[in-house]
Length: 152
Image (cartoon, rainbow, N blue to C red):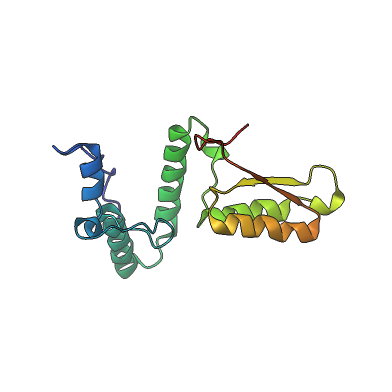
């Protein structure tokens, strides 16, 4: 039940910022800073969700269609990052992805056991990292420079 390619945003007369704000109805009447899983809902996300629900009503579980959509997203992210699709993991969240990766690392064997994080991480990333200390990981906090950059 595909609706075709996603339309690209076109800058409004007020510039790119106004075009982006126009995508999120709540921003017309509120300052909304929650940017995690309950971030502002855009028109496109609502439309995609409604498409998903409509497809479910008509066809039941559209597994192949949504796997194809996930692969299309993976390819798009890879292009954005100048990488290859097989270098991009599609996860439900950053926390879930990070948890899966660090849980698979053999910290208890010694050797390379350092996890480096900064204060810019989403809070659960730090919690996940520190949970690995029980398995032998060493968590190192890198502090940003005065200009906000993270040192190499």
